[in-house]
Structures are given as C-alpha cells and as structure tokens.
Length: 146
Image 1: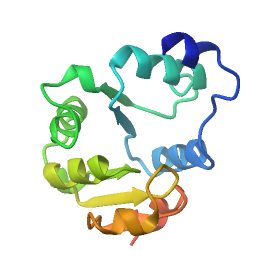
Image 2: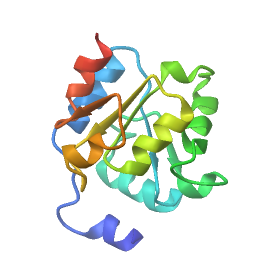
Image 3: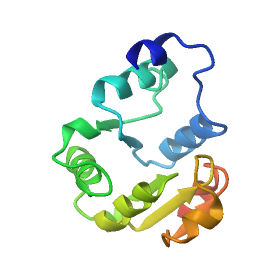
Image 4: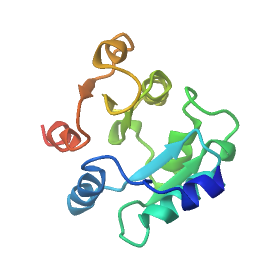
C-alpha cells in the first residue's frame, strides 16, 4: 500500500479539502486527521499531498497508535491530548462512514458531521444520527460559524 500511495497516478485530495483546511487554520483552528490506516501508510499519503509543507494539517493519528480504532474514541482522544484540548465539545469530527460517526459520538464531540463524498449515501449516514450531513467538506465552515 505504501508503494501504491507513493507512486500511483491520480492520488489527490477530494474537492475543496485543502481550501477548507486552510480556511479552518485562518479561523485559528487546528486540523487533525485520524485514519483506519496505520501511521506509516497515512504518512505516505500526507507526504504525497504535501499537507505538512503546505501547512494544512497539525496532527495525524493512525489506528496502530491506539489500543482500539474506530468506533472507539481513542484516536480522537489521542489527538485531543496532543493538541492540549480537554473538552470534546471543542472538537468537530468529520467522516464519511458509520464508524466515523460513531467515533465522534463516542468521543462526545460537539459536532459529528457525516460527509457524502465516501461510500455512504446521505440516507445511509442519516441512520447513524450525526449532528449534520454535508455533501461538500467546505460546508463545515458554515456549521462551525453558526
């Protein structure tokens, strides 16, 4: 997988992701990614996209860095610890699967946002009761500004 993510043509961010990460930083927010991938694979993707060099992410947590991955809250909690956040009500979890939604709920995040850019449809995500469902990652900005 590392070879694939390092060299396969067409590895690029989803629409509006980089612009949204930049806007979040401009609002004074920290941006972290957690993933079901192991840290080495996640690092390969982040390095390929040059997100650290572009100043787009602050934290990256792989599932192999915690006792249990999603839907358990440990990756979010580890990121909170590393960022100095003690109140999960200061955290927004965005994800495109059931286990993403459950992870955010289990961590007690203020907003748990399902995004339809993955394999789950709006109707499928609705059954897990996220606080919001969006079709474009940039809609996060509208939610947090309310």
